[in-house]
Image (cartoon, rainbow, N blue to C red; front, side, top):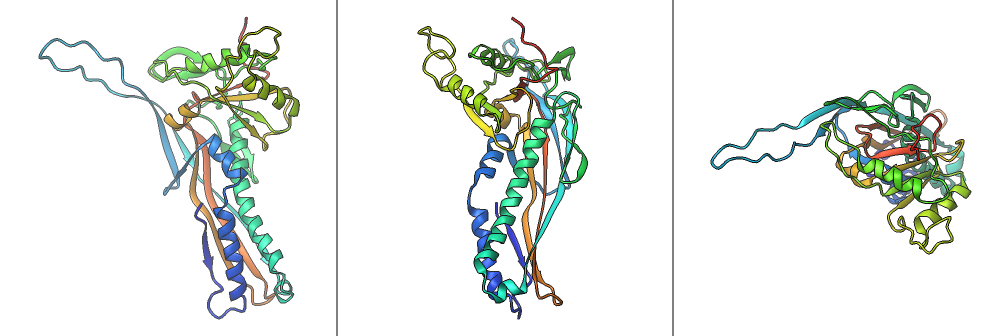
Length: 336
């Protein structure tokens, strides 16, 4: 992630050699791809930013091509601008201390562990921030509290929660669309197939069908029986829950993401996502305004060395058409 280290101990400090070892541990930990990085990359478009925030607007596609007579000009069309949203970055910070006594006792391994833990804490914070925003933006919940900060906006550009029963299309009046369903996946592939069809028929703000296929199932990390069931649904050769010889039409179509930071749920909620729609619509975004920036200094009174980690980031949703949630009370029922 290209961590920056601002080393204030290089010139004439007794900690000089120790700072080199600790800095090397930080750089090495940052370079290692870990489970938190994998989770973030699976759920979001990770982007850089050089501003205090980023404004995003949904864009509907052009209309259909029109037939023209010989020698005449083509009809002029415009892109349909949808709703816009401002995603503002938040600052995050953390200190750790290496005592003078630890250095005197040559506890370099312990000092390195502290440094590595700072990097891991930063990466874990990014993943937790993203997960909480994703799974909390449901029904009437449009803000969240994280890291002691309240009122963090997790709504979509239409002013609703990411998962809602009444999303609107800006240029199609009177139309509402649900991406929040009460049905759980059940004991076979029927509900999964219906939900995938719902996503494929989501329309842009102009009213044109987008046609994105859902290809990812995201489930909580503390529901082992449900996890086992989902693995059978998407991986079995034959039809799950049946003694017939039918093929499993869902086999090979899905990637399963077990979000171990999504816990403590009632029932069996799941999120279906189209990874292609997420990328094409730039829908779920995590902005690294300032990746991990580490500064160190020595306190003349205690002779301790303090490391400070600082970062700025944000998470936001600029579209809702790439995901739907099921298994939630208050969601739309699929019906027969």
